[in-house]
Amino acid sequence: MSKLWQKDYNINKEIEKFTVGNDYMLDKALLKWDILGSIAHAKMLNKIKIINNNEFNKLKKSLIKLLKNKNFKITQKDEDVHTTVENHLTKKLGNLGKKIHTARSRNDQILLDTRLYSKDKLLDVHKSLLSLCSSLLAFSNKNKDIAMPGYTHTQKAMPSSAGLWSASFIESLIDNLELLKTAYKLNNQCPLGSAAGYGVSLNINRSLCSALLGFEKPQNNVLYCTNSRGKIESIILNALTHIMIDLGKLATDLIWFSTPEFNYFSLPKDICTGSSIMPQKKNPDVLELIRANVSVIQSYQFQIENIIKNQFSGYNRDYQLTKEPLIKGFNLAINCINVMNLTINKLKVSKENCIKSCTPELFATDKALDLVKKGIPFRDAYKEVGLNLNKLKNINPVKNIKSKKHLGATGNLGLEKIKAALNKETSNLNKEKLSFKTAMLALSK
Image 1 (cartoon, helix red, strand yellow):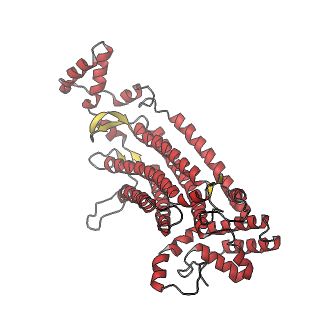
Image 2: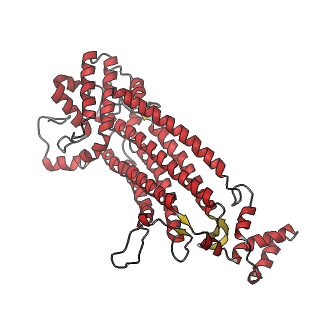
Image 3: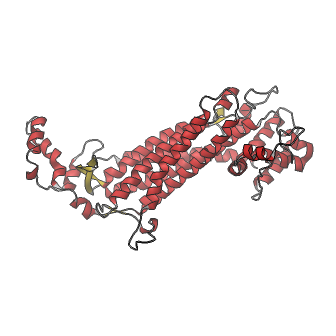
C-alpha cells in the first residue's frame, strides 16, 4: 500500500528505514487509541455531513472489527499506525476509506493517540501507587510500636519506629499523586481537529470529538496543540520521576536495613536472587534495579525536554523521538511500583533486633529536654548531656516512642488521616476510570 504522503517517486530505502525508525513497532501500543480516535472523528464527519449515515456505519463497523483483530500488524513500509489503519480501510471500503482523513493530519492523530494512551496509563499508575500506599499503611499499622533507631548523616540519631519510617513514604507518595493529577489534567485535553497545527477550512466540531473521547475539554489553540507535543509528555515523566525517586530511597533503606549488620527487616526469599559462585547469597537485586531505574526514568524526561527545547513553532520531525521515552517511562514506572508493592506486602520486621539497636546515645536529646522541663536553658542542658554521654542509661524505647504525642511524631502518626486520604483518592480514581471506560465502550459498540 502507498504512503499517505505518496508522491510521484519512491523514497530511498535507507532514508525510509532511518526516518521511520522503530515507530512502527512502538505504535502497537497506540493502535487501540488510533482506532477509537478514528471512530470519533468519523462520527464528527457524519455530523457535519462530510459522510452520510451509511458511510459512517460502514467505517465504524470496519474499525470495530479491526479493534478486535489481535493479529493486525504495522509494518515498516506503513511507517506508522495512522497509515496502517487508513490503508486497511481503503483496502476494505475503497473510496470511503479515503474519506477518513478529511480535516485530520497525522500530527493531530499522534497527539490524540498519545494523549489517550497517556490518560489510560496515568490511571494505571494512580491505581498502582494507591495500592502501594495501602500496603505501606498496613505495614505502618502493624509495626507502629516497634522502636528502631532513626538516622542522620547515616549514623544513629534519635528513637524512631518502623511505623514512622514507612508512613513517611506514604505521605511522600500522596504528594506525588498531586503531581500525577496535574499531569493528568494537562493531558486531559483533546487536540483532535488542530490538524497540522493551523486548523482547517471546514466547520468541524472539535467539542464533539473531545466529548466522544472522554476528554475534559478540547485543547483550544491549534498551534499550541502542536507545540505542546513533548511538553505534556515531559510533565508526565516529571511526575513519574518523583515517584521513582521515592521508590529509590525506599529501596536503599530496605537494602541497608535487611543486611546482617542491621538486620531490622527481612526481605521475602522469593524476591531475592542468588550468586553464581557464592552458595550462601540471597541478593536484593530487585531493589538495586529499582534504585538504578530512578536515573533511567530521569533520562527519559531529559531526552524529551532536550528534544523539544528551542524548536521552531509548528510541527518538526524531532517530535517523533518523544514517543519512545514516554512509552518506556510508563512501563518502567508501573513495573517498579508493582514490584515494590510485592516486596512491602511480604516484608518482615525483627522486633528484637530493632529494639536492641536502640542504644543509650539515642536518648541524649530526650535527656536534654527532660532537663529543660526542670527549667534549665536548652543550651546548658545540651552541654551537660554532651559532657556526660557515658552516663546515659538505657530506657524503654517502646515507651519512649509512644510518649511522643505531638502531630506526626512516633506516638501520633496520623494513620487514620492517611487512610481517609487514600480512600478519597481511590473513590475519585474509580469514578474517573469508569467515566473514561464508559466513553471508550460507547465508541466501540
